[in-house]
Length: 386
Image (tube, rainbow, N blue to C red):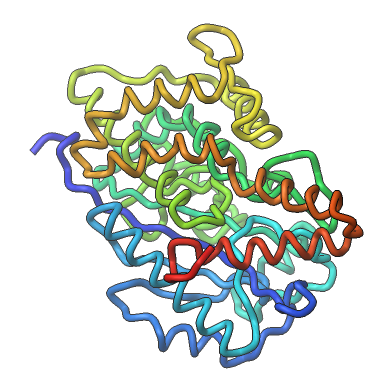
């Protein structure tokens, strides 16, 4: 079996926010038995649910999946069960990387050893982490292959971010950015684009240097946009906002899986994607953070800004063979639907501006955005969703 023919293993982590359906604000102190209720509803072969850093957050993780279809089914179950548990306790969940108006100063962090240490170590930088993301794990068993793919696939990280944006608001303000989440997250150390290493051994030696110096306990505290997972033999992409609509998240995950498959296929043919300096990729990262899919990204081969729609068509053509092999042709082609309808960030701003035009004040317009997020989070998850 060649490297490009390896069977797909994939898993997705999502983080949700807990809101009060009356005030639409975050619930800083949710009922203590909510988490246990969620766990009791979710079978082990589907996935798991765990607390996040802030008590107003909740994380779900699928179990290992062999297809994107299986991954979608499990993630839908996790969203549905979490939403049902929240509703039983008078709450709702929203899948958005920031809340439209919640104040970070009013939140409480979860009382667990890891989170207590983070709060002590990072202080206000950690306290401001009122953000949620989506992480996608794709299995890559070989360490050296994982390192090689890490170096190459980084080029495409801004393209994935642009399709996922869901954080245009921060503490009641339209930030003008499609992904304000990254602005908050980038305040942490060891974030942003990954370093490039000549071998997995070199990466491991650098991690060991930080561990031996007592700076970090292990590589789980390296929070790059993409990283070799410390817990699983996977390459974990972390740059994406959480997609409010489930199907949009599956499309982003499918594109990522196909990109890794394509790079494996090139490697089999003694070819590879050109590795660009981080200073160049960083420009596209910023453009995706600021504009999302709106104002194009730089094509460094052509040396010019190219409309995102054109870049997407090139990527879809590049990945056609891999999507066919992985059985996710419909999932990656659905990226065109995201361009047509807009990402969650676009839709949130549209709801906000439409409410203002209809006579709502700013507070009412922001609550309308939360109402839209509550409904859209269950779009495609329950029969009457969205």
